[in-house]
Amino acid sequence: MPDWRQIKSFGIGGLLVIGLAGNSSAFALEKAAGTSAAAGYQAFFTQEKPEIDGNLNEAIWQQASWYPINFLLLGKAPDSRDFQGSFALAWDENRLYLSAKITDDVLIDKYADPLVSYWDDDTLEIFIDEDFSGGDHQYNHNAFAYHVALDNQVVDIGSNRQARLYNDHITSRWRRQGEQIIWEAEIAVYGDNYRDGKADNQPVKLKKNKQLGFMLAYCDNDGSIEREHFIGSHQISGQDKNLGWKTADVFAPLLLVR
Image (cartoon, rainbow, N blue to C red; front, top):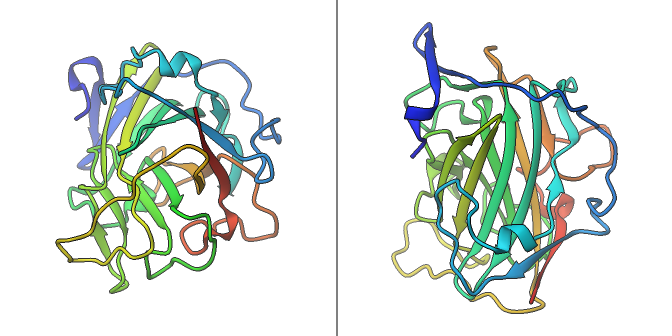
């Protein structure tokens, strides 16, 4: 859960609104080296399981490669106070681990119901294709597009074409550290044999040199009816860049190394 003691919040028309300090560094919406779909990402093996506490105390986060979240997918480019982001990945046999550093001057969660307009809140969106096969996943589990909300609930579209919770797939927590939100997640990786409502679904075991499809994005809302910005971790070609929730073809390769 968020560390509410460290955050100053106020209400606007019943919304949860959290004001945060910004950062004066430039927000560069340019293609950064090592973040293209061709180059992909790496996650390093960790023998020490990270605590999901928003503190980044483990050695793996100092050793890991950090990648920017800096490609505009929807809306207008935010300035540096409005949004900046970067992330790193690690793994062990049982889980994939994500840490993200987010600067966002206003955090908003409009609805108590986590299944209502969840994409228009401030949300970390984690895209995973377990076998890097690509292809459609809009209404199936060939891949996942997890929306991780400020209350740490996890939403994707189920095979019945309705939004549903996948809170047992991801454990997350965020905490304010100075001008940044540190958001950590422990992710159980499921293959395309996952079936909604089945009690015997099992996450895959991870191993060295396994390749997954991956993308990270952030939905940014500063008080509008809809999100103003949608920013991703790598470039998507073409006019329509909001494709990650429908097809894993736009994910980049993620290699597990040790």
